[in-house]
Length: 97
Image (tube, rainbow, N blue to C red; front, side, top):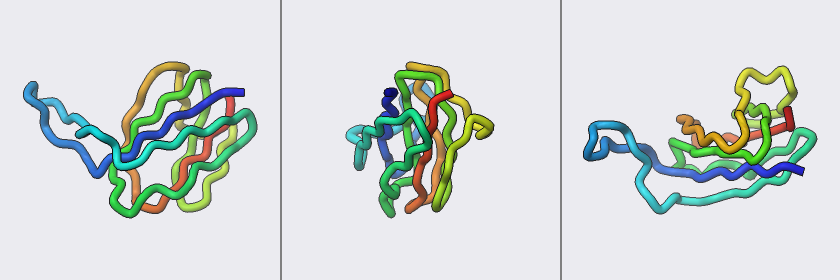
């Protein structure tokens, strides 16, 4: 089985280099084990940005009641962190690629 880690942030700010950065520590972290489509817990009401990284190639979907498929538009490559703006209360569904 594979694992997806989700870190929730209230947003980003401009760092010293002028690039947007998430401010640590995260509001909440989740760890999801998956092979078939699996949903996260709902994102916090104060979450606007997430960092996701998986230890296997996968596909994900973000919305109020998501179901991930291998046709889902967002494909993550193993061990490659990604940041996304999200809506508070949404969930993230993930499935192995």
